[in-house]
Amino acid sequence: MTGGTIDKVHDVRNEGLGFAPDGSTHIPEMLRIGRCHFPLVELLMLKDSLYFDDADRDAIAAAVRDAPERAVVVTHGTGTMGDTARFLQGKAPDKTVVLTGAMRPFSLYASDGEFNLGGAVVAAQLLSPGVWGVMNGRVFAADKLNKNTAQGRFDV
Amino acid sequence: MTGGTIDKVHDVRNEGLGFAPDGSTHIPEMLRIGRCHFPLVELLMLKDSLYFDDADRDAIAAAVRDAPERAVVVTHGTGTMGDTARFLQGKAPDKTVVLTGAMRPFSLYASDGEFNLGGAVVAAQLLSPGVWGVMNGRVFAADKLNKNTAQGRFDV
Amino acid sequence: MTGGTIDKVHDVRNEGLGFAPDGSTHIPEMLRIGRCHFPLVELLMLKDSLYFDDADRDAIAAAVRDAPERAVVVTHGTGTMGDTARFLQGKAPDKTVVLTGAMRPFSLYASDGEFNLGGAVVAAQLLSPGVWGVMNGRVFAADKLNKNTAQGRFDV
Amino acid sequence: MTGGTIDKVHDVRNEGLGFAPDGSTHIPEMLRIGRCHFPLVELLMLKDSLYFDDADRDAIAAAVRDAPERAVVVTHGTGTMGDTARFLQGKAPDKTVVLTGAMRPFSLYASDGEFNLGGAVVAAQLLSPGVWGVMNGRVFAADKLNKNTAQGRFDV
Image 1: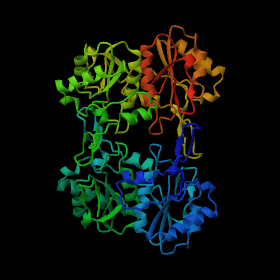
Image 2 (image 1 turned 120 degrees about the vertical axis):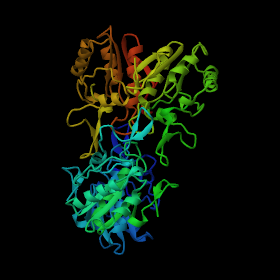
Image 3 (image 1 turned 90 degrees about the horizontal axis):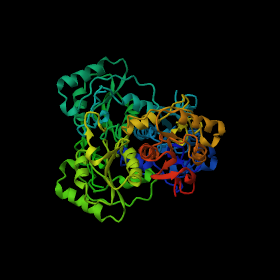
Image 4 (image 1 turned 30 degrees about the horizontal axis):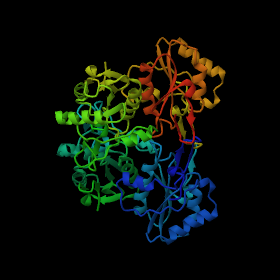
């Protein structure tokens, strides 16, 4: 988990969206709702991906490389998900890496987060080694992973 | 769509769960929440799969066979999902058929339905022709698709 | 808190509605969501009010009488809410007692529970001593408190 | 209805909160969830109350004065709810006017909106003519209606 919209919450004081003050993530609760008990979860950072720099992406690459699992799902902000996917290419060539996230926070009812996370967990078990994105029912190779801001989704 | 728990609603009069009196399904809304716009949807029936007989399963087989798409997701009750999967084997050999559903209705907050549907839509694009089940983050071949009633999920 | 639909949860094993196996109530969470921090809460029982007998109603009367507060909200099943209201009349004549509940469980999205509880907490502060019901935006004297099963609400 | 946080929605493009592009309000849906069918609803404006000026408040006063009902609930932003309450004092002396709103939008799960609206609808039927606020389980006279920003609620 690296943060992104999927993990944002409403801040009652400034009417904006941010991360939980206690630094917590919603992904374990999302997996519990999905009755999906087997993924090991690791919180790497809670950041808006628009503010990611190469140090952040190096940290993600290291975490993926060091994971004992052969398949890894990275929850990530939608703003630069494609950039990170392309950055990760070749960094852990024996691993299947699937990036996912949400256009609407999980903490706000009617988020696409559960749908996307369910797709990413399944795709990580089915796809060949490489870097992929799974969003809104589509599977994208890293170099085709781009947010469609006009439509409010990831799309071909 | 064939019904099942994923499509059940709370009935205020008898405090039980049933299908919407107007015969509607939640799957289009679930896809909209998942921001997944491309699947064509077809409502075949709204039934509890515990009451499925061979005529119901023949209707599902015919719908799968007649669909112009090469990949089909069948939403289905959890009670006999495995039976239908095994019934469908060999009935449309060139198609990838993925059964899914939910342990908790979508209309009740915190359902596993979005997670499962997101997984099924992605799996249908990645799996070889055959009959599969996708539930709770797992992909099952038809002959391994069994509800774990004690745990309240589908599991290996 | 005495139970009733407002506190029921979905049971994944039998597809029915019942109380949480750990005997917990949702009312404290509902007050927290309503950002209403001052009511003292006491869980008396978790029962479907259709199964209430005079011993149950005696226990409610005693709890109301013994409460140090001058105003008490009783969460209660809708099935016999009116019966309990009439039973309580005269049992604690110096207290304002307001019964409330829900037609749809709080644990199921889109419940009337928050709306009713918010009304009951306010009514308890404004009404004269006596026994009242607050449901679906209406205030009822005990002898007028009756569920409208056909409409799925409490109504004049 | 005048807008305010209770009616805001998440905007997927800029990750902020605003009003629905189609100019719609959630109050009718909130009343339907509360199974409260009798209030007549009128959408006056959809504005953040921080941007209200005297022309906006004159419009609210006129709408209250012109309403045929003797009791009116005004949904309103929390930022200047107290200012509007004091502005309205004496403008419709025969009416019971109750302001309410939410700290968290209704469209975001776990909002205080239903709890507050349920309280306001009941209070409007019980309070004497005058201008009041009902928020978070409390009833405030106009001159005591103030947001507690530090606690994220209205409080004594």
